[in-house]
Length: 387
Image (cartoon, rainbow, N blue to C red):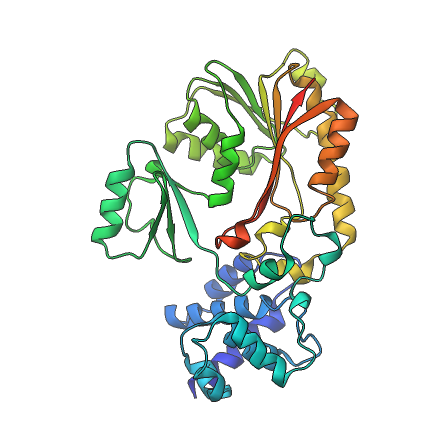
């Protein structure tokens, strides 16, 4: 039977999966080693695995098979062969609203508690709506793109002619079902960026002026810098990170976007870097802090099982070490934009309170961008001014 084979494949993969690496990376390697699996088999196996991890700690005392059946019922809204075989009565109800399906599961499994999907609720920021946040883990996030200015009409015509399902969010932003293969349709990779809508909204906090000097201090692959440059192409930009490989990715993205006038340095900002930055002062700093990433776990639900409370303290201490070596390079009266993709109060508003007190900063504005309401990542951003 098809469903029996799907279950056996799931069990084989889950038994081999090490809990210390991203599921996407492991699956890519697993599929390369098992080339006998067709594209449909790989697609179904990936769906089962990601749906399984979306349960978080829900019904953790049940067998993996039982938990997988529950996950398939809650996450999917179309009948499928797996659910039809193992729980045909649920397969007939799979189209129901999520809240109604949860009631059905609760009747059969009294130990089902929605809050168990996210076992770190004590750390949630107070402005978040916990029930809505918990429910979002059973909803696949969308794929968002930001279109280069002037290319909007061309891309919209392309995806329309190709019959691809999409939504127009604003003039530069489109949303697609997760897994949409745009790279096979749009040959010119420099005319759009895959970037979550919440990450795009962070850009409204930058407000750069012409000829400003800005520093993206934890630039990673440059997503925030691309936003900044799109808003004001005439800025003078320094990008730094402590990972050479990821800065290579940044250079490729900048080249595709036509950005050439910038400086790049490999710096470990947990250490004093005055020997390299002694004469640098900036009109703006983007501090996209290394963090738990808890606001993005709707895309990487395996992280729920991999995370532990003590890691929050690790990240908050890391964020403070970096801040000590960054804020001193900000001009008085100018902004530092503090960003996380976290839902933890320790990394967000409590960290802002520490920044304000330690460096004599002033909160101009701050916000939790509630991506869980929009099939997107949840992020935190604060615009802080140096007194």
